[in-house]
Length: 409
Image 1: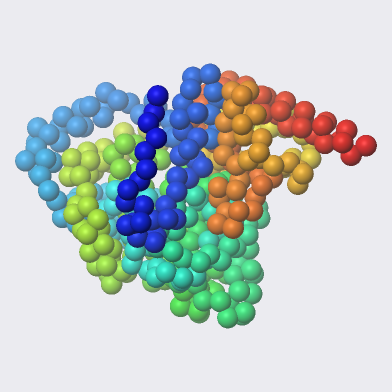
Image 2: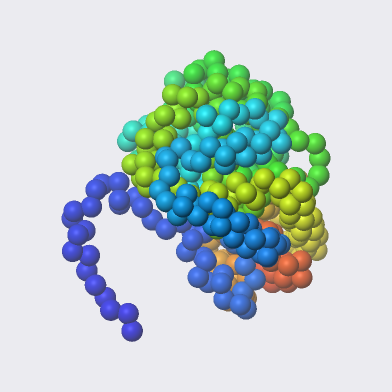
């Protein structure tokens, strides 16, 4: 039996520690890990598709040839050879990057934290999508900002809402967006909206934080230019290899102007001194073989496309007709809107009893809205598991709909 204990440091913590709470996504992991539960909650990459024998070979080569470097401390900016490889990856999406303007971080999550550290003072206003990536809200929340939520539709951020806020005198420190296959929405910002956003922020001298973890996971349609391509001087670009290679190596990065880069390096060195040379060298070596990384990425895209299709087909078959959902052209997620009288958070316990898990929509809004929305992840479960999970959830929703109608007379 767990013992109850009193935190004797409770009156000693900094004020900002009071806002540090586990996200709803993290809280679900323990439940979702149970084998009988179909987890449509966590956005875990399907690492089983990564050829482990080749990773072992690469790791052996790194240790055999560069062991003294791999096992040693490194510099705060990251290994130059890796930064060159990351510039190569960005070029795949039309982003021209000087490796000297890249800072390697411990996953893109650390990049978000460093952005918060160097830009946000307590009480500062920041503009975020509504819904927004919960990890960004968590990272920024440590620095005690106020939020300006900007709603989305199928073409991404409603830039007109941001423009109206500026006309009212609001002045966000920056605008944060995941414009390609967003988390949690799955939608992609249209080219017209990207032009509107970059022009508006350039005129107002408001930097844009472009978070692009999913850009190379496109299933269909033509690529849209990155915001960084449209305005290199005013857009700070964040990336990660977690979706194109492995989340286990914890390699992300930020691309920014030199003045921002220097502050990011100082902030990173204060946080963890440097990244892991072993992980950076392994990642550099992995992406040095073009056939290897392209073949692996193509296999991942095929798997995720098939699972997206399975989820959308299952939603059409099993969900109440009053429900709607996004149709992502890439990435990991489908965003579902239920009838307004359904509370996705209140239904979660009943869903878990039926051995299916999802993330309630309220996790993705700083102001607590989104009660009738939920995020479904199709990246990790097999197609059959996805179909079964959606069928279980659909049955629960139909029962709730019947109960509601009967109470309405």
